[in-house]
Image (cartoon, rainbow, N blue to C red; front, side):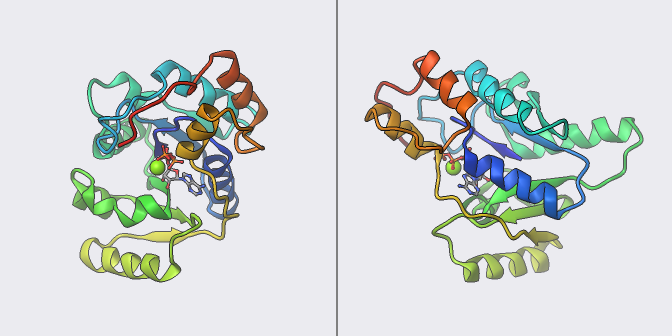
Amino acid sequence: MGGTFDPVHCGHLSLAEDAFRQVPLDQILFIPAKRSPFKLSRDMASEEDRVAMLRAAAAEMGDCYRVSSIEIEREGVSYTYETLRALRREYAAEGKEDPLYFITGTDTYLNLELWRKSAEILSTTVFIVGQRPGYEDERLAEKMQYFRKTYGTRTLVIDNRELDISSTEIRQRIRAREPLAGMVPKSVEQYIYEHGLYRTTEAED
Ligand code: ATP
Ligand code: MG
């Protein structure tokens, strides 16, 4: 599961848990982007802070949930096709032949063709999609059918708890000194306040 995780929140975590419950997966890797190609003009919390918050959240979820710093360690903008190639190489070297699944919310899935080497990604990766409030089922169904016809993409839509939470809203709330009201785990909330994250204005893209 890739993302900016700026910060990680309960929408991300419950999507991962619902995917893990409904699809026979060995483990879930949260992969924070060093730099998303779609958010180049935006100020973000540091890599260290985003990883630390993810690690705190994942540690409370059990051994099957891990954080991978593969994109943080790579130079420059983070492209998912490079990450998938690297993970496939790593797993092949360990003799693992299982397919890789990529977990996304609806907003991300609908825009996958904007990604670099999207045809490669869509033809080699199984997608697990969870509904994100505000996105219509119909558009998702159309897109799934189109990806399947065009790239042979396999997509599993899971029945997930829909949580109307975004990192953008969390950052806005902190700037406005509003409570986070259970949008992030306690450990993440504590980290945010202890490190004074997201208190100043930012340029949104
Ligand atoms: P931002 O507002 O900064 O874009 P975000 O909340 O959208 O942050 P991302 O890091 O952009 O979080 O998202 C990573 C992945 O998690 C994406 O696939 C996105 O669709 C999914 N996701 C994020 N929030 C939710 C949510 N509330 N429910 C389901 N999926 C979500
Ligand atoms: Mg987003």
